[in-house]
Length: 528
Image 1 (cartoon, rainbow, N blue to C red):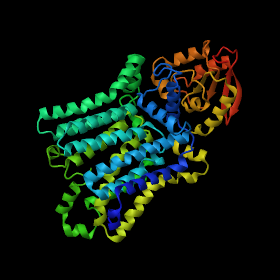
Image 2: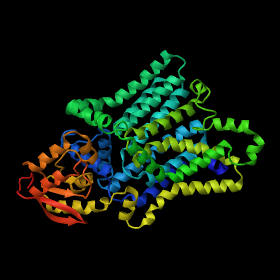
Image 3: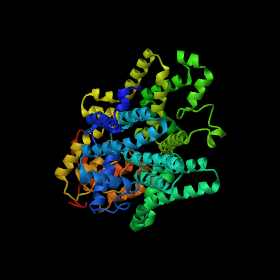
């Protein structure tokens, strides 16, 4: 795996290669239909930054301000369509590559860094985890990786205050982009405590970390207080913790979601399993037979997440290298971040890509010289197939077919034409309601949403949302148009009361790809 020419190639060329590879792999997916998360973020960001609506009041979404600022930057630099958003996501992933390189090189050496950035370029954009989309996890991965690298740097430079402040600041930015980024604060505090010689020293180091975290959050907190403290806290934190999280999702739902996620990622899991098998010496290899079991176990103990006999008391006080401890905690923290939401959506795994790529890179680099030439060829082939096989979804044919295959949402392909119809027929300020989980239509149609909750999960979880929606449909400020995207209503009666109210006040005006579009009867809706 290591060659003289690879050692002579400068780091920036490897990074350029990895960034170019990531872009090339994303190109077939840039123009796929906008997904719900992208649509919701884009709609809220565009209306909020234009001063047309008040965040967490008229515009409601369970996220801090960071992701909307990120989308605003993309709007100002790359454009406002779905291609621009996904190019912005690639820029964020490309910016994460140097951080991955620095951590991997400092921890495992140059060869590990080379393999890690190539792995991250492929994994971070993989269709298996919806990595090419402009989801919040893509942007959050950059400051999260920055926090991990600065923690490693702090440990190696004598725990100076500035790397600790920087690490805390990165955790704060990650949290503002995606609330699950806060798990990196736990990672940092755990590293500080485990590697400190005394409690007082740990407290001082933790204080600098927390100070950086607080400084990063301060502008958002001040802005939240100005917007309305209760509304801000509920949207940014309380809603998720109390109504839609791993603590509130049922066990059966979580187990099914995890199983589906594992099925999507099985080629990568197979590659990882093989790398572990090779590392543990469970394959007959001449090198292992000559070196003996004890030497092999010692080698295995030096490999990232593959511990020696276990994470026992020796892990806590010096037997495991600080970089290895940090990487393990980073990886475990990222998995905890995936679990926080309780839904185990594929794009949640984007936040695991960076630490996983570094860990898997060291496994592969360590396993390579232990194999025969034939075994090396087999491992290389399996690695290429496992990493690139999810991209084979492009063979499904049209962009619509590829979109349905990746996202499992039959409504995405029709949303552009539905939005076009609304732009042509609805006045600019006419409000619309899309039932129930496709806010991309609001953004693409450039028409204001009549109801502040944009997703079916919010409609289902927030008490009183159904009654308020029924009052809206029956009241004088009802939306001018109702779009029924054939999605199941998130209510116990499957939306019977809602559609009964719609039929009393609306009539069908058209169908676009089978999607019914209804207009109010009496003209009382705003923006007529």
